[in-house]
Length: 588
Image (cartoon, rainbow, N blue to C red; front, top):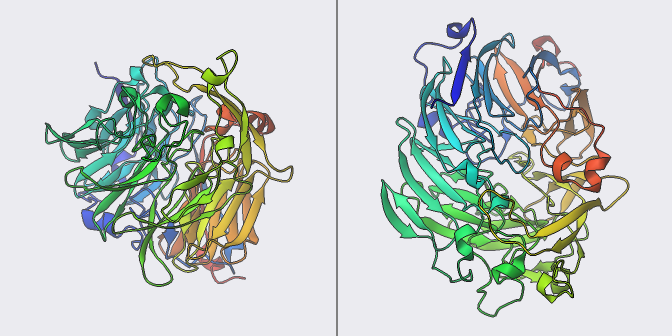
């Protein structure tokens, strides 16, 4: 049965030049081709840096709205997408798995595609979608019922659609796809339901599955329709049959390092959260309770789906510290090729790009309690007394000992992408200062049911702020400046050669900061909380900036005391596009 509909409005065929197609070269050079944004992250390395400097510190005060586009209807909730720009059209995804094409010149809708979602979808953390990908004459995105859809770029009509997994088992899909060498590479969501995380590569033209790589040991990969190799070694770090529902959802998608021809995906929390059930409650000399490859970064061969390397940020994970945070290639102060990733566990890691080997790690949030640091091998130095207790050791067996852990399970940094400036050589990391009361409970797996085995209440650490945008030197771990925000930060960051850092707040402010000092230079009230991802491009000699406004995401759903703190914020769904008019570009 066809579960999808496409609505095409008047004016559709006017936009774009006939026959224009996005090539592999376009994808590879997306950061430097400033008239377009055809990849998530403004480049497949996810640096979110623009070389444009038409808009800069001296004239940003002259940035004005150009147009606004409403996502319309009652389908709102969180809007976490990054827009794409190509051939005179903006493409955005919205909540409830919608996709829009908008005329760049006027802000007028060209077409809209709505996934007809079935009853019974099981999204963990709001009905969000984080974006699409463009290649050839098609645009690709995922839906909450765990499907991947390819649409005609000009008409919005379905070319192909493929089912990743069974949504009734808790699988969903929310990330922006990544396209490399004609393959659409995606992850899956659903770690709270005992799914098995995997990375999939589909042929961009036909929709055929090229390869699949599960990220939990014991599961068999696929290549060209045949079994390939097992992930890891069966029962090496998982007890019994726990690996069969081991979690590790790859829900944030990945980056691509062209220099080493490597995909880098993060794997989320192991399932269930109760680490004692996974044999991870007590330390073992042979590290057999590490539960690989959950809470890890994984280097994957784009051609075959084989794992090249892995680095586990939180072995024996017991606080829901997912390892999915984006991995960004860069070159350090000494010319070494490095990866950087700011983990949910509160540490900022630097890895070697050749083999994923540990280089260094620095705490980037306050009062981390679960570990006292990271040793020379990259393993955490655990504070064992800060692990939630084993329910079977309790008198009633119904609830283990409660601990107050920092960060909270929503992380020192969650999904919201950081940015790296090639100008300042700093990372701009959206973070939050909070902790949680957390305890373990008995749990058993049931298909389609939450599989946590834990309870929690999130609490702010400070009265003055929760959100904290930090400028971090990856060479030393030094925090150069720290911009505080009352509510949690939950949206992406962008930086530019013009010396600007853009981000939004849940209070609705779209803000530009000085990249060297953190001084606020400009802001605009959008009317709803911003959890989206800003972009910039140039058009007819003018620089534009765009962001989606619309409050939602995980914080109001899971945030405990913090959720109450932001309960007054209004939902929305609007794309705001700003420009610096030519006549004001030289003004100061």
